Structure formats: structure tokens, C-alpha cells
Image (cartoon, rainbow, N blue to C red):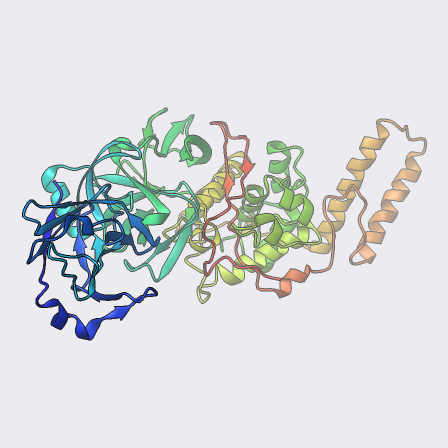
Length: 581
């Protein structure tokens, strides 16, 4: 039923009542506000009572009408004069827009049955109550109920009536038990007024729904509690959620299946918890608590701890896992970066694999950028930093991570570990909330193949034996690596060209080695896996973190197919994503 409100208009008092508040429009008509703006329901009908009998022919869409203040268009209405001619009903032909601003106008040309006109025109501004209770039939299909001025009033009535949702501007802003999903790039704020940003996520990110406030939706992501703007997310009752992410024990590995824009993608995260049986599925909001027990993964590893593995072992893993990867041969650089900047070498390798699709992404191939540095969500390829070589990229990334994300005095630092959106590098480095877990998955697979030594570093009481604390002569290591690469190249040539002088070949190899030992920065052959180049010019800039989202659409096996997906945001002005020179 539509609510009605009586407006009494007296021809006797109008002249004195509105003399001091008149305001003329472009047509010279003087308008006077009957009262201050009021809140009404979305189907509000108006009853206007006159103190004398009125002329029915005086009422038409030019003398009595309702205007939408935002669009400056008339809202269709019908008018009806009572039998005694003293009460005019103004009825909207359709509901007003929720939270919309409107004004009811009555022109002074309206006349009584005796031909008397009003002294002045009047207007009554009103706002439609913004919160509407509804029953939900399907996503975007509702049986709408009454509208209320405040969210608290609407929630109270929804609970009493057993309504499924409360709507604002057609969007669900409250439900008794539901789940939140980001529509696109979404900022998470630390305050309910949404003025202080704390982190950000990419589209299709699931968040736990906690409650609704006047200005925002309170959510939980991992262990972080924050607030999001209603227009940036979709809130659905749990029984209308089509898909939800989960973890599964697949052959002893913990595989994470992410519901991403209507379909599932997956990646291997780590060793399945002992509490999970083979094939069992479990949901976890923080990626470390499963069936009430907390476990540690490589995303929890202190990245300041030195890896056990040598350059040769890292190269062996890459060659075995992805034989055609151009990263093969860069084990020396990963370990060298570890020693120089105190950043774990296994992590540096895994990070490069994840961001660059094993060195084969377009950004890696065209710009030698293995870490997606400055590949912001709004323009990943265009904004990505460019390096002279893979080696430059690795060394720069290690330095950059060390000085920014693993440096507790830097505003970007949230812990010396990969983490998630609750803590660690993932808070400020990437919009993908599972970025840290995906890199941890690559570390787990490499460690599993190489002897499961680095997982011991997760034990805070573990002390690395001295035999693993090797110091390298990097000039010598570089030459030995070049000799290996040259030898491999020569072996390939020997398949088509038969050597006739073994002695001369030995002499040539000896000369190359001597030249490498005596000349710093020696130019390498085309077959070399690495280049010794000058420092990339972007080292002098304040490069920002990557927000290039990598979607790992792998199968259950270790060697799954990974895809690099550049996510374009609908909102990209944050403290953490800006272009550098």
C-alpha cells in the first residue's frame, strides 16, 4: 500500500506565509518551499487539501508535477480531485528511484471554483528512502518490499519479516549469512568510512561477510578485517553462491581450487595437512588453518634465511621441470643475489617462475622483466620496467625486495615472508590475494625434488649445518658456467660437424677459459645462458611493486600449465601502484 501525506493549502494565509522566502525562476514564477526536504517511501502518494473548492480544469501536468532533481525530468504522475473539490491526490505512475531526490511543484495558476488563484507557487522537496527489504528469487531477481530511511531500520524489519536481503540502489547491502566477491580491482579500508586504505585485491576475490554499516561492508580476508565500498563488491546470501574456492588433498599435495569468474583454476600450494585424507576437500579463509589446526607453508618462510641449494641444483630443477625455460642456467645469479642482498635464492627463483611464466611471458621476453616490476593493473605491459638482461632483472629485484618489503622501516614492509593479504609481501606487492601462496607452491615443488632441505627452514629452532654455508668466487663461477654453456653448444654442433683435431679443440677451450679469467665483463657467446651487462637504468628509479596477477590454471599434477593473466582494474589509484621512470 502506498503511503499518503496530507498537505493543507490555505488561500487565506499563503500571502503572508511565503512573502519572505520567494524565489523566481526563469519564467518569472516565484516558488516557495512548503517545508524542508523530507524522506518518503519509493511509492509515496501526495494528498493536497485546499480550504476551498477547486476548479478541476486547473490541474494538469504543467500546473502540478514532480521533477527528478538529478535528471531534471518529470516523473509521471496522475492527479485526481475529490468529489468536494478540496483534496487533490498526486499518485506516481511508477516507484521513485531509491535514494533519489525529487520535488513536488504546484503553480499559482491553480484556481478555485470561484476563479481565485493562489498568491504564489509552492514546491515540496523530498528524498526517497534508500534501503529496501526484499525476497530473493535468483541473482538480480527480487520480490521487493518496503523501503526505509536507514540501514538499521531496514535490517530490523528484514529480520522480523524473514526477508533475504536489503537493497540499496538495486544492490544487496545486507543478508543474514552471505559471501562477498570483488567485482574488479577493489580497495580494502581499515575504517568503516572508507578513508584509510590498507590493501587491495583483484577481481573475483572471495571475502568473508561480517556485517553492514551505514557507509560500507565489513569483510574478512585471510586474518585481515576491513571495509569495502558496496558498489565495488557483490554480496550474496550463501544459498545463492554459485561456486566457492576450496583446498583438496591430491596425492599428498595440497591443491587450491579458486572459483574465478565462473570457473575453477588451481595450483599446488604445499604438502597436504596430515588431518586431510586423500581426496578430501576443505575450505580455509587464511590458507593455513585446516580443520581447526594451523600448518606452516613456504609462504611463511623468513625470506632472509639462506637456501641450502647450490646454483647447479637450482639449474637442475629448472631443466627437469621445464626443459625449454630460458631461466635454465641462471642458478648462479639467483644464489649470487641471495649472497649480495640477503634474500632466499629458492624464493627468487620461484618468484621469477611465477611472474614470468618460466621466463616466457611477453614482459619477460620483450623487457627482460622477470618479476613484473611496475606492471601495474591498469597497464601491465606498458608500465613494466625494462632491463638489459635477465641477470639485471634478478639482481635488481633482489635489491628492491630487500630494501622495501623485507626492510621493517619501509612503509611497504609487512613481514619478512610472502604471506597473504593479512601480512607479508602480498599485502602491498600484488593485487592477487593468493600471489604469495602461488610462489610458495613453486618453492615447495622445487624443494621436494631437490631433497626437502629448505622446508627445514620453517622450523624456528633449525640451525643450518656449516657444509651448506658455501662462499662463492663469482668471477670463477661465471667462467665455469660459460664453459659449460659453450661446451653444450659445441656438443650440439658436433652432431652435424665431425671434429678432426681433438687437440685443437682442447686448446681452444683453454684459451676461452683464460680469456674469461683475465677479462672482467667478457662478452658471452650467443649460446650463453646469461649476460654480464651494465646496471639497468631503472635501478635509479623508485620502482613500485608488481600488481600483475598470475592465474595458475594448473591441473592436479606438479608440472601444471601456468598462465600469466594481466588484470585490468576499474580503480587503480592506490598508494602502491604508480609508474616509475
